[in-house]
Image 1 (spheres, rainbow, N blue to C red):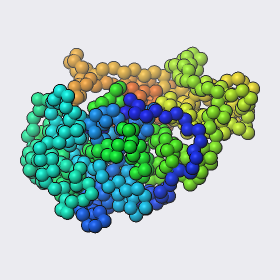
Image 2 (cartoon, rainbow, N blue to C red; image 1 turned 45 degrees about the vertical axis):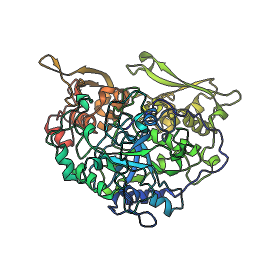
Image 3 (spheres, rainbow, N blue to C red; image 1 turned 30 degrees about the horizontal axis):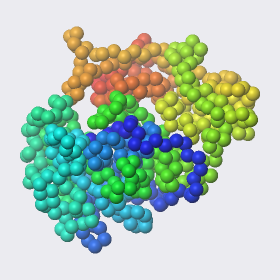
Image 4 (tube, rainbow, N blue to C red; image 1 turned 135 degrees about the vertical axis):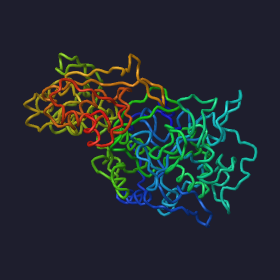
Length: 577
């Protein structure tokens, strides 16, 4: 199972200077074309030089890992992955219906075939197994997460055990360069086809070792060998038509699969995952999802996140290690040929430039400190306490229109990855506009306060607002537990209580567009764990429906669990599908 890596395996501070230009294996445009081509390439007969068969991942599809951001590198092994001895990825391709991943941001591994064509380092080994659906993997599954789920024996790390006859069935004929590592438990159970898989699992019941909320397919399914093309064919067929007799929350076509890769086999990376850095092809963020799943190994409850800022943080961190790769957008609502796209404005390093050009100003050149402080509801007129970034410059540095952009670049480089900035700047360019305004209106101050949630206006309008424009769109919000006959309603799959959100917009909030109102609501409440949606975009559809059809209603009631899939469906259900 995918893991959240809140415990840092390697903590990195702000980089000061790089001694050489980062390695750019390919141009952003070529990278985009290759990844879209791979996503749409239905090649089920991949071969390594010499003709040995490889799994489908070797030359087609997209292998990616979606991760959180924090005081670590995105490619680092999480503490839970270290215990397992392997790390979870997903594999997507045009013939799979997957439309949402476990995080909104992550990185893509370059296919071995592409690496060879580009004369870049080739990852030939480490591919273990793939599950048709999330496999509840962890150290309590044998064979580095690819084996059966069993109670651990005291003193025995499952991640380092091989069952008897570990390689009694060759992965390929002739064996390829990864044949000694790849292994699937489906072979051990004589399950070789999708039909055999469905027969085996069509009527499964919760195992004794698993909680009832994590039952059936997720924990009982077997794993497919990563180097047997026929196993990949079966995985795709199972994923697209699981054929289970009972509904299973982890087995449906739109869900993700789980692809396990062994951690570094060379022993050089000291469990920090740095051995994977040379194979990263691009970073990616899902433009339609803020979904963050609760997974095994979590140290705190999942919170919805917009993927762009984490992806930008990932790009900076890899750049600091000497590699330059683009950020791509991923959009499952577009045709497969346009699944990924490239936007220059998403990039935070200049991919074709030297480090000095990409990072023209370091925070240490200008900034003495910048701290997030609370500002009260009465002071701001927002009806709630908000965060403000209190900026102080180094002695001798004076804020002016001439250096405002350079100071902003330094400020954004150091603090742009903070949760307040990532989540609250819903008006692109707001922080820059405020600093530029302050450089004109208040250059002699000793400190300045910047709020990412303020709207971004023209320079003239910023001056009229004394650099502090305000648009209060929401009067109040309140979460409540939903009940029926006096009893709390719960999610049948997890047993967790279901919540509703009461929203009262201001007069201004009712007059702006539904998109603007939703953005402000998400800023205020989207990080709350109770926001988790049953379907991506459900809350936005409900807000749009209420805005357009019940605008004069005093309070609006939103329910994140609603299975809204289209504007028409939402409207036909009186905004509560």
